[in-house]
Amino acid sequence: MALTGIEVGDITPVLGLRGAVVDEGTGVNQVGLRVTVKNLSTRRAVAAVTGPDEAGYRLTVVDIETGRAAQIGDILEISAQSPNPFIGVKPLRYTVTLKM
Image 1: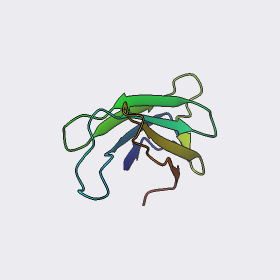
Image 2 (image 1 turned 30 degrees about the vertical axis):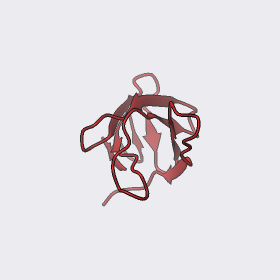
Image 3 (image 1 turned 90 degrees about the horizontal axis):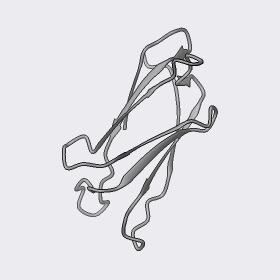
Image 4 (image 1 turned 135 degrees about the horizontal axis):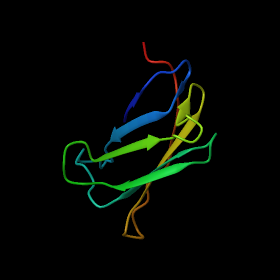
């Protein structure tokens, strides 16, 4: 997963996320999964469906209301749901840090 933000101190009003959900055994991107990224601090969430391109999914969070799409220390929970009920994906948690 890659994160990109526009820095305003330790808060960003725009956050771009991209990543892929890959099969552990084959390393192949999984297509058709609904990926949801939720900021556990702000309780806001965005979702996209994985595609066949190399990036897998791309999401952009823009918060023009409060100017806080993410802040250093926020925890983002990335989860994926498959249309197949026999396929499960363990959610991932990521803590937002300062990129230097």
